[in-house]
Each structure stands twice: as structure tokens, then as C-alpha cells.
Image (cartoon, rainbow, N blue to C red):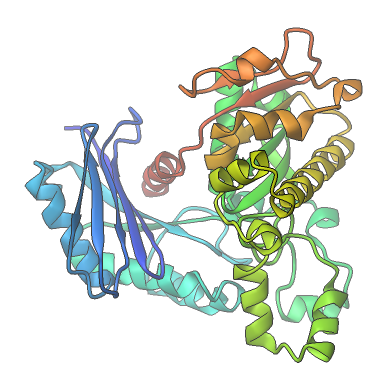
Amino acid sequence: MSRSVLVLNAGSSSLKFQVVEPESGEARAKGTIERVGASGSSISLTVDGEAREEDAEVPDQAAALEVMRTALADRGVDLAAAGLVAVGHRVVHGGRALTRPTVVDEKVLSEIDRVSVLAPLHNPVNADGIRNATNAFPDLPQVAVFDTAFFSDLPEAASTYAIDHDLAEKYAIRRYGFHGTSHEYVSQEVARFLGRDLADLDQIVLHLGNGASASAIRGGRPVDTSMGLTPLEGLVMGTRGGDIDPGVLLHLHRVADLDESALDELLNKRSGILGVSGIADFRDLSKAVHQGEERARLALDVYLHRLRKYVGAYLAVLGGVDVITFTAGVGENSAELRAAALEGLERLGIRIDGRRNKGANDGPRVISTDSSEVTVLVVPTNEELAIARQTLAALNP
């Protein structure tokens, strides 16, 4: 019987799930439950390539697991007979102690809870998701896979903030980085796709979705990444502005009387593309740009300017690069953005082929010209498969 992993990603009001066979990479079933704990809850489910969506009563995350189980059974996927060997969980922050996929026990759960101060919007929900899954699947090991793990051994020069050393040590302030599961998976897929040894490649990976991050990877290990203590630093994102002079926040506190809660909302929900343009979705932003809306054009220009700065910075950090890869929702699907992001970098050996760039989105592909010194790729990310594989590895260290 094939071995499968149930991959869960519990959010504050959603539950994403997937039944994955790590060896083959096949995902027989996947879905999302939206508006958990609110009216108008629904479940979207795809089984064997056939998608369906329906309303559901989902009062809390524990109920969401039962809704998932029932919906899967109704579509012919009996989890009790699906060959499940474990449940793999996405956990946003592992802090300094949890730096690899880990079979969860009470000690691990306590550590996830303890470092929730570093990710207060995510870790408490992730921990509750593990508890709920433990109750729902008591005979299966629960494995936590951490977004921060891939970046846990960044060079000190890259991970250290230039603030008071004792204060930073006491409160665990450092660059942790996020989207690590995606960056690791994509960088490995790059080597596989090119038929190259991962250890011989210098890479820049651009994970561009509603959340966005960049990484510089030498020989399969990261040497820098754009997100920091929290997912707020770095690139411009859908509702997060990325890099900002911290003096701006002090200034707003003094002159606009914005307290901690108001500043938190500003940085997480009212900044980025949305803050500049009033539009959060990149597809809508592109339409607005083509319609001549000035704020939309400005938002896109700011986004591209920051992205190009990071590409240039990581070229310098690596001392040259073999491959630049676009991934995640925006990176995989917006040919226009990819072309604009790397436009004018021919002197750095980066040349995009317009026809290849606009080609079908059907898997990993080269979008640079044959004469480009730097290979530019689009590689779809698959964090669920990565979590499933890391879950299996954690069971057999």
C-alpha cells in the first residue's frame, strides 16, 4: 500500500488540507475550508482532478477537521483506508530551537506556544491545529514543519540586527526568514530540472505571492533572505509594505497618536500594494495600470523598484548568480511582472526571452534567452509536497 501524508495548514479562519503521496508526488485530494467560525462557511474540494464547492457549518477548527473528513468520504476518499502514516503541519515560526521537521510531543507544543510572541497571528493557531489533529487522528504521529527552518543557519552577518547585543539575545531578535519550505523546495527543483548538482549552483529565488520574499542560496544553503524577525520586512507585498524606516513608526506614534494596535494593523493590513493603490489583488492591479490609474501605476513601480533592489543586492552577496527563479502565485502567473522586474539588466548577464516568458504555465521552464549568462526560470512551488516529504523524513531520521 502506498504511504500518504495528510498535510494541514490551519489559519485563523481557514483550513487548507491535502492528501499527498510523498514518493510519487501525487495529491489525490486537496481543499480549503473558508470562514471557519463565521457565517457563510464553505469547503472547496478537488478529488482526482474534479473540483466541487459547497456550503458547510464550521463553528471552529475542530469541526473543520470533521467537515473535511466527511467531505472526503463523500467523494470516495476514506482517510482510514488511505494509507496515512502521519499528519504534517505547517507552522510559521520555530524560533531558535525548532530548526528541522519535528515529531510533535508536549515539549514541542510548549515551545511552539512559547515562541508565539514572535508570530502572534500564526503560531497559536498552528499549535491549536496540531492539538485538534491529535484528537481527530490519535493513532497518527503529528509532525511540525517550520517556515523558518530553512533559514535557521544563515550566516551571522546576515541574521544579526545591528542593535544592542544583550537586548537582542534576551528577546531572541534576529533575522529568521519565512517561506522557507517554498525556497528550499524550489531551489532543489531548479537543480533537478537543470540536471545540475545543487552544491554547484548560486541561486536567487523570488517567492512572489500576496506575501513575498527573496532568498540568496549558495550550494543549496541560504546566505540571505528578505524577511526578518517577522514576515513584515523585505519586498513590497499585497498588504504589507516590506522595508520601512523604523523612524516612520515613531513619527506616526508621536504626530498621529497611533498606538501599538493601530501600527500593527497599518503594517499588516493597510500597507503594500493595497496601501498605495487601494487594490490588493495583483490581477486587479494590472487591469488598473492598463486603464491608466496613477496610484496603481505607482504601486507597481514601487513594487518593481524594491524587487530589483533585492535582485541586485543578492547578486552582490553571491558574487554572481547562476539562476534566478520566479515562483508562487504572482511569480508563476504574471509574465508581464517577470519581464518588468528584470528589464534593463542585460549588463548583468540577464536576458529574458519574450516568447518563452509568455509561454504556457505548465511546469518548470526556462524564460531566459539562450545567450543569457544567467538562467531565468519559472518553477511552481509545492509547499504541501515539501511538507509531506519532510514529514516522512522526520519519521525516519
